[in-house]
Image 1 (tube, rainbow, N blue to C red):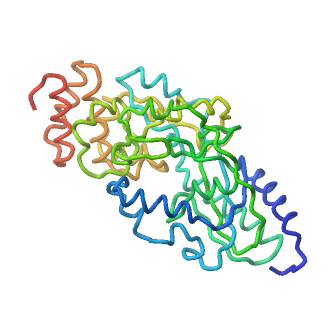
Image 2 (tube, rainbow, N blue to C red):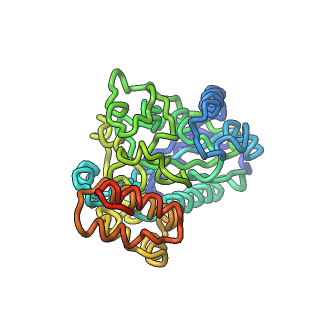
Length: 355
């Protein structure tokens, strides 16, 4: 730092102000002590709850020791950005329309990785302009970073029984981002847990993935199964998925704290019409070129066309039997992908049709 006499408390106040100007709804500071989170992660990995997400353990202690990932890191600036738009169809409404595709609300607009990363870089540049060169690196769900434990340490909320971060004034419909820095910034105090005796998230989970308070078996989680999992979805879980074709918001939908959630003013998160409440039959008819075009710039694109069809086939298998549904499925019976064909055959059997 070029100014040894810089008052760090004043700098943190300025960082919060600049963060607000960039669209962040909250900015907090965390230290790098993640010992408890490291122990919990090791136990979780040891029980195999991460499924195919081998990257969760691939980087060893770099995930839980920020200075090993970015040498010199001693503080982490953590930001929160609300994403729920007023135009988005409520999840409750979509779940009552089994002919429609229910896509997790965070994925309806522009890819959040791009939105937050750009603004985090601008925040870091603003700091640099004020104090001179300093060491930093920005992250948004893009590297071995313990986002939720860091956010909890920074006072942005607490990790709820569904393992998402909760904020008393904003619920959980938000993204997180981080700036690892070598600045000795004063850390914010954490907030206490306010889940109390509530078990709504545990009770509502369609696949019973929340096997105990604060403990998630990702192998049963619909978000994992429809996004991270690359193979066949376990047959016994397919009927439980319903029309959720990309992610699942049920635990957020029922959380009492989300009555305090605020709509995002950021236009990048405006939902695309065909993704917000699209018809399963129509989306299943997209060829790969159409899929790539319609999902360009969104987080959905990363799963690829094959998994998109796999997920939609499950949704169609759970949809009401109609000639249009059966016809759509039959049109994919000879798809080049064995993965797609398997799920199409299963879906047809649900409608009493032979493959």
